[in-house]
Image (tube, rainbow, N blue to C red; front, side):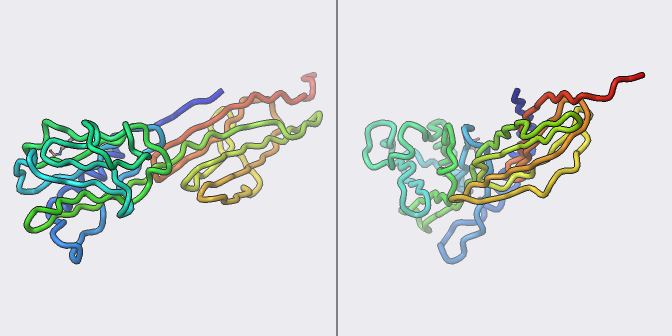
Length: 242
Ligand SMILES: *[C@@H]1O[C@H](CO)[C@@H](O)[C@H](O)[C@H]1NC(C)=O
């Protein structure tokens, strides 16, 4: 059985909000760029990448261009034409997943929303107003974390004890993994075996239990404030009560 203990997203949103004030002051020339706003989300969620002019001037008839890693076309708006109404040139990766906020344009707000984020959407985004004087460029760093789903099994069983194994696969940022009993106590376990393949982590954690209980393998990803666990019920032949 799998439970998703996703924590409130309130905290998650505080970071970008706090950084918005910096953002409005930044972005004049490439030379004095501020450090980017960092936004972290979990895979398959939607994310708003913020970008707006501190002057709040109307940009309905202006041009702005969102790019990823300096080259991929994410979203280009030019005086009413854009990738969702026939304009060609958008990168395949973003087709059908990105929109702007038409009602916000008159307040200088060029934010976009990316739906159904994938780990491969992680990267550095720029929101560029190339024709403004002075030119305005804003930087946003997006981190999309894969949801690590622990899989658990009984590896070995004797009369008195059971060896449990938990595997967490494909987490883009390294999760912490632990075994707990049904009361939530952390169980002593072997050192986790961690390997890394192409930016993803593969973690194996084993523990030996000697009591009948419901055990739980918990994977926590601090960076994206995400926790997920999988349970397993274990029956151990306890000595008969005399
Ligand atoms: C820009 O628009 C987005 C989407 O409606 C909104 O979430 C954000 O708060 C707006 N930013 C500002 C500075 O108004």
